[in-house]
Amino acid sequence: MMLTIGDVIKQLIEAHEQGKDIDLNKVKTKTAAKYGLSAQPRLVDIIAAVPPQYRKVLIPKLKAKPIRTASGIAVVAVMCKPHRCPHISFTGNICVYCPGGPDSDFEYSTQSYTGYEPTSMRAIRARYDPFLQTRHRIEQLKQLGHSVDKVEFIVMGGTFMALPEEYRDYFIRNLHDALSGHTSNNIYEAV
Image 1 (cartoon, one colour):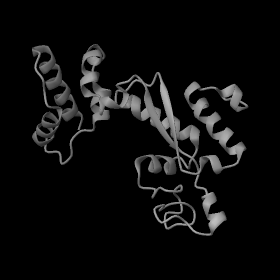
Image 2: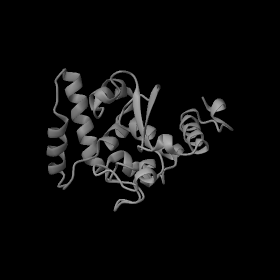
Image 3: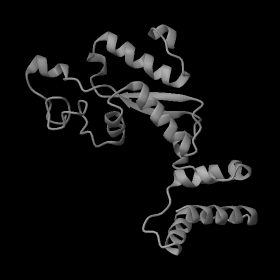
C-alpha cells in the first residue's frame, strides 16, 4: 500500500508542476491495479503522506468534500444520549414516523434515528460522550484536510431539550471543553 500511496503522490506532484488537472479517483484506481491491490488507498493516508513542501498546494486539491468547510466554518454534528420522547408520557404512543429511541427496535439510538446514520454511528462508538464525539470528529475533519479553526455544533437527538438541565449543561460544557482543551467546572466557564 505504501508504494501505491507514494506513486499516487508522485503523479499528483508531476501534474501540479506541469499545471495539469488530474482525476484523483482515476489515478488511485490505476495505481492500485498496477500494484495488484483490491482496494484503493484511503484519502486520509494519501493526505498524511504528502511531503511538507507540497502540502500547501496539494492538500486543497485532495480535500474530501471541500464544500463542507467552504464558508470557513466546520460543522460538527453530535448526538445526545438516547432518551424517551416526552410525547410518549402524555399519550402513551410513539409517533409513526419516529423509528428510534429506547422503546424501539433501535434501542441504542436516539429518538427519530435508526443508529445507522453517520452521526449516530459516531455517537454510539463514543458511547454518547460529547467530549469524545467532538474530539473524534474534529480529528477526522483535520485528517481530511479541513480547517477546524471555527466550529458550529449541531446537537441531534430530538429530545435534547426534554433532558434534565444538569445533563444539558454537562453536554454543552463538554462540547466546548473538547474544542478548548480546558476542563471547566460549569457551563459559564466553558463558554
